[in-house]
Length: 316
Image (tube, rainbow, N blue to C red; front, side, top):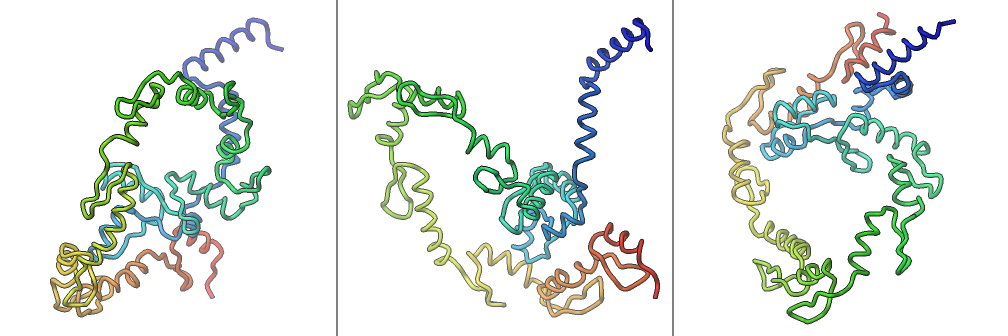
């Protein structure tokens, strides 16, 4: 049994460790449990579900130029590319099922798991499936404990109650200088913006709108007709382009060299660069990403899958 002095020394040592590192044994133990229970985030499994892990910025540019799209094959490779080429980590991968945009490897895994095992993420109150159940419960099911004493309205957060009180129940002691109606000091500016301020005018027709959002929605209709009016076909291949600039870029990248070109990977000859681009995207670049088994003829897109296969593969 440790003596009183030894116990005291052990306590002082523990307190010193917590002060210097900010972590206690209990915190470390909790982290260990979480890490042991966390799912193994294998890039191969992620790629199998999401189909493609691509850079959306580069994809759009390559589509305009008619170049093959690049599949990075792993989240880590995409992260490295985004930092080196674009100077930031603001990337996402789009879910092929629901279109959701996932911005971290953890959310990629959780989102995939939600689609594969929806019952794990099903709300026991309303049966809806949500990736973040805590957020769903706060927004939809938790009791709204902040109640307005004047009108009975309830709010989940105190801040929303304060805003409600200012806008709805403060004294209307400010008069509009244009219509003489009275408002609170918190709502007078909203009134002026929505009723009396200069309207948003469409540059293509005489229509005007009180709010910018309505103008933007209206402009989208003009954009559709303008795109049709300005679209021009390529005189070489007949493909229709949005405008003359896009057509010039198309001709520059697709028809500048009409002489035959060779594929550097397999040596095949093609009439033009466009045919070579299609070939690369569908054949050679796809094959370059495959990892063949040295024992049999099977090929794998993911290196880890190949290693698992070779552990059990035997020569015939």
